[in-house]
Length: 189
Image (cartoon, rainbow, N blue to C red):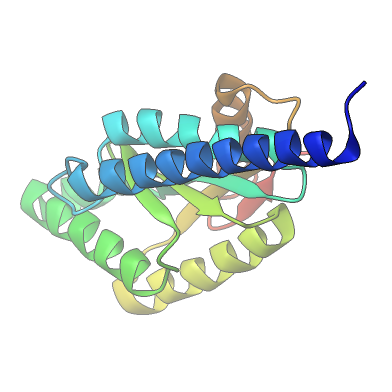
């Protein structure tokens, strides 16, 4: 029979191991964030997104009190912008967009280039209501400063979602935002 003292010692030993594991995981995430290849816009690369989303998803899956949202952002009518002003101007617009997002985001937000004029933002410690407020604020800032509009799709990470589901759901919400008139955000429900 295990005595209460032995049980407490076992509990503390497991707690210490868990804290060490979480510390290593956190350090690994910081390492990846610092060494991640950045794309020409200054956003993290899609490869980095694929790595870091696994880490963030694992943390949410382990802790039901922790939230994370994935926001996919697309510049409305970017092809028309490129055709009108040229590809150099289009590149400058992408760079300015990322700079503006970085300036008005939290240190914990992870902005990645998803492809073309699409960006993925991992919003840590954020539920879908807060993500919606962030998106509305960014959309206004972008319209006021860059004179363009964006559409956004938001999906809150749930334990039942795989990473593929999370991305697919955010993409579906982005599609709904574009189909319903652009210059708006939609939360996947």
